[in-house]
Amino acid sequence: MKIKTFSIIDFKNLEAANFSFGKGNNLIISDDNTQGKSSLLKSMYYTLGFDVRQFPSGWNYKDMYFQLEVEIDENQYTITRQQDIYRVNDVEESMNVKEYSLWLREKLNIDMRLLNTRTRELFKAYSSAVILPFYIDQDDSWDGGLYRNVSDTMNQYANIPSDIFKSVFSLSSLKLLELQNKKTIVTKEKKTVVLTIEGLTNAFKDYEKEHEDLPEVSKFDKEKLEKDIQRYLEIQNEFNDRVVKHKVKLLTKSSELDKHKQDLKELEQILRMTRGRKRDIQSECNYCHSKLTTEQSLTRLDLSDNEISISLLKDEYKKIVDKLTIEIIEIENEKDVLDNEIENIRVNLNKSRELLTVEDYVNASAKMKASDELRKLLEKQILIKNKLEVEISELTKEINRIRAATKELEEKIQKEYDTLIVEMKKTISNLDIEELKFLEFKSIPGSGIDKNKKFLGHYLVYISLLKKYSNYKIPFCMDSFIKNEISDSSEVKMFEAIDKYFFDEENQTFFSIISKNLKNVNQETSYHKTNLSGNLLSKEKYGEIKTKFDFE
Image (cartoon, rainbow, N blue to C red; front, side, top):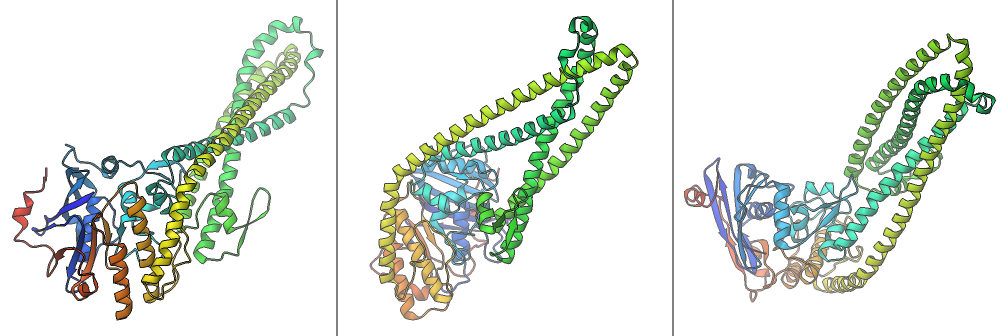
C-alpha cells in the first residue's frame, strides 16, 4: 500500500486542506511542535482505519471528513471516513467499522484472526489491529510497553500485541488458529458436560436417599392389581418424570452457579490485588480450600495480568451469577407447583384403602424406572465427556505439530532480532535494550532520554523485521520520537539510527521533524517534504476540496 494524497474538510468551520506524498520517504516538517504535524499523521492513520486513542487538543476530528487516495497492488482507491462511517470508491454503500475492516483485509490479502478476551474464541481482526505494527504514535507509543495502549479498541483481544505480530510474521497460520479456536470450543463443551455429570450424580444420590424405604416390587401380585396400577402409573409417572427433570435442572444450575461464584470471588480478589499490586497476597479456593497466589489464579482463569481484562471478565461473571440465581429461583418455584399437584393426587387416591397398596407398588416401580433413567443419562454424559477428551487430545497433538513446523521460521526471525539488537547498541550510544526478548512486549524500565532511546531502538528493530518478514505492507509512520531533553551527541546518534533502519525507498515512510533537526538527517537520502506553518486548514481551500467528497 502507498498513500498518495490526503484531504481534510471541516464542514463546521468551512475549512479544508490537501496534501500529496511521495512513494518513498516523507518528512512532515514544521518550525516548532505546535503546527499540526501530529494532527496530520494521526488523522491519516485514523482514516486508514486505526482508532487513535487521543488527538491533539483543539483538533475536532469528529467535525471533519477525511479522505485518502491509496494505491494497493497498482489499483487506486479512495477511503473516506467521518467518525465511524467509511466510504470507498469500489463499494456503492457506506460501511461501518466491521465492514470496512473486511474490505481492508481483502485488499491486503490477509486473514488475521485474534482471540477475544472474554469469549476466548477467534474473531477476524478489525483494521486497528492490522495497522498497529506500522504506526508509532506521538503520545502513546513512548511509555509503558511496546505497541501497547495506543488504541482502546485493542482491549477486546487477548495476547496483544504478540498475537498480531505472530500473524504478521506468519508464525501463526490460519490452520493453527482454527485448531486453537476449535480446541477452545470443545473444552467449553467438556466443562458443560462435567457440570451436567455432577448435577446428575447428585440427583441420583438424592433420589435414592429419598426413596430408600419403599418396598420391593416383587412382593405384589402384578396380575391382580394390573388394572388399577395402569391407571395410577399414567398419573404418577407423568408427574414423577417432570419432578426428576426439574431436580436435574436445578442441581445442574446450582453446580454451575457455585462454580461461577467461586470464579467471581477469585476475580474480585485478583482485581483488588492488581490495583494494589500486592502480589504476595493469597486467595483461598472454595472447593478444596487450597491457597492460590494471584499468578496461579490468573493461570487458572486463563487471564493476563491486565486490569481491564480482569475487570471485564469479572463483570461478565457477575452477570452470569445474577442470571443463574434468577433461573434457580424460577426452577424452585416450578418444583413447588409440581409438588402441590402430586400431593393433591395422593390425597384423592388415598381415599381408597385398596389404592394404598397400589400406591406402594407404583412408587416402588416408579423409583426403579426413574433410577434407570437417571443412570442412563449419567452414562450417556460420561461417554460424551470421554469422547470430548479424546478430541481435545487429538487437537493438541495437531496444534503441536503445526507449531513445530513454524518453529524454524520463528528461530530464523529470532536470530535476526538478536543481531539487530546488537547492531542497534552500536548505532545508538549507551543503549541497553537486551531486557526484552523477541515478541516480548513488557513495560520498558528507565526514565528520561535513556528510556526514550530504548523505545526507539526496539521500534527500529521491529520495523526492520517487518520490512523483511511481514506478509503485507502498510506505510510506516513514526511521529515525534524525541520526548525528553536530549544532548546534541545523543540526538545525532538517534537520527543516524532513524536513517539506517527507518527510511527506505522501497517502503513508504512518514516521519515528523522540526526544521532545526533537518541537519541531522542524511542529506544524500531522497525525501518528499511537506512543510506546515500556521493553521493546518484554511477557508480558501474549502470550496475546491469540498468537491472531492461525496456527502450523500
